[in-house]
Length: 376
Image 1: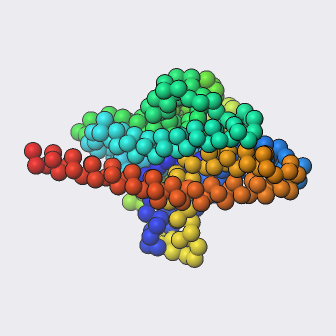
Image 2: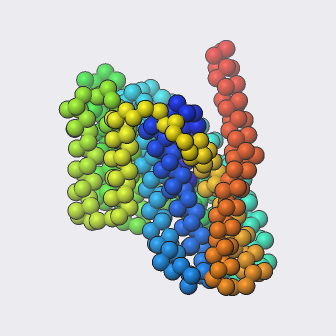
Image 3: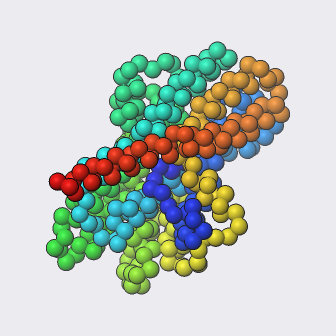
């Protein structure tokens, strides 16, 4: 699934290499998630398995770990957005969280309605567990409030849980920034935010992340998200070497302790991504303007739209191939490639026709509200 984070300046040739790396990681991880869902949902993967059993088994079992990339990048960019100078400032937590909600939910609900329509069409062509039953108003309302998992409703689209978790994590980060910013006169203010984040990482990795009962709540995922926040703090080239060494120790030591007590591949991947982001922030390699970055930046730009719309697209392609194409491994493998390509094309269209226009409307409303407040 595509990371739901603040935009990075990767669309320009002059973007720092660190953000070019972020876009590259987003693109790779997003494609792995789409392929994971193709291997996990729908009959095409079952029919194609004899042709490439190892590939499909790997995509089914391990490609989903790419979500850790999104969690770490999400934490990294929320730190850049909410406390770019490494110290918590004065923010309005309710307004900040509301802006996040308004950014996420409108395109998300459009995609949910597309998934409902896709399920209705797919039922005419096949019978499969990946098809959702027609939702009632309460189920739709739970999705609109990003509470479907918490309230026990089945998700209407693969990855809907991640949008809800991203919103929870952002809200937690905004609340922590606001609370730490209240101690603006304290001498230890510079280290207050890192200490709070590392405490959250430790609690998450040593307790919450080890209990699947918490996987609908932010504390389960805060370990990976917090590693991204700490990577941003440590990557600041203005920090002195001793401060950097301390921050790196605050990243690595609790994570290694958690892995020693209970090794989880997903957490090891999160730690590796955080370290890479930290290193690229400290080593100034110049702008990310090499050939091919324009395509990477474009794919990164539409990654949220691809994430939102790929499931209904894959569901319809699965149903069409189940109904009209022989269940031969080669034909069904071509169907998986067709669904993958169609997801990218639909994501580009969704970005242009849904996500971008809704974002402009939100920006206009925000600017108008700010102008009214300034006038008053």
